[in-house]
Image (cartoon, rainbow, N blue to C red; front, side, top):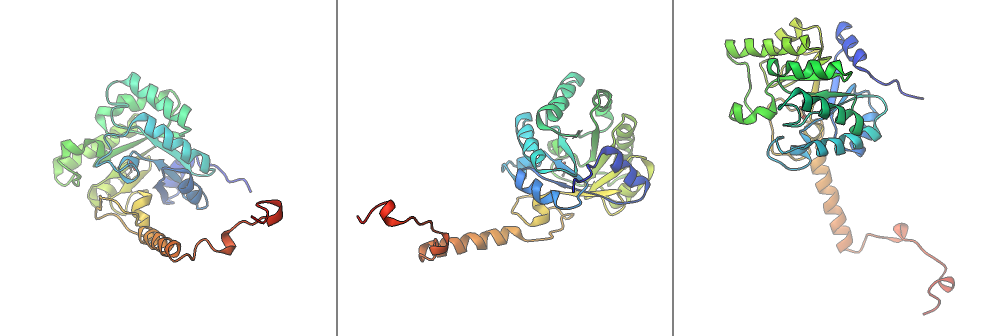
Length: 278
Ligand code: KIV
């Protein structure tokens, strides 16, 4: 049966109906196919691809070409979830015009159904302009990873009163600019609750406590695939990294012991029709 495609309207309705929104990242076709078998609502092709797939120390080296390449792969495997593509560092910061051009590329060349932009008040003109040309925008405030150097590392934001007020104002600016939802990352649970109550658009938390309207995790973190970044908010639901290591070790042993390939994994032809009796 054809699956009903999730739209930004469905995501907004879920907040009104107090149903939690589920979101995960994906970066390639096999993961997209696996997620497509589930009822996940949003698949974010995040610029975390730079860290968990490409091995960079942070998300800053990720390019538009990287994002388009990975969004395309995910798009081919997804029939249900809403696909959001991350705008990489320097694809929207310089000017409104560049942000429009690049948001358009993620949709036109990648197949994204929405784009995500980090930043609040400073980005509201970009968000408004992108929404105005018909592209849904997901905001992202709090610990915005593209500002890692300004933060002096991946540190929880909004711990003091002034910083918390600033993040709340950023979130409101994102909503006012027309975003359909917003990611709240790396902030105290109390602030996550306050913002979720203050906004009409859904909040999607990652390290922002249990009161957000939805949650997102990086799929590699959820599955226990090895990475270099292990914040407290991650919950591992599997240890796939260990399973892969075990499987590869078994393979190596079986090849060395001449157990693989066996008859069962070998092709045969009738000798006389092929190599003759030689
Ligand atoms: O790039 C990403 O994967 C993200 C999520 C962690 C929200 O921005």
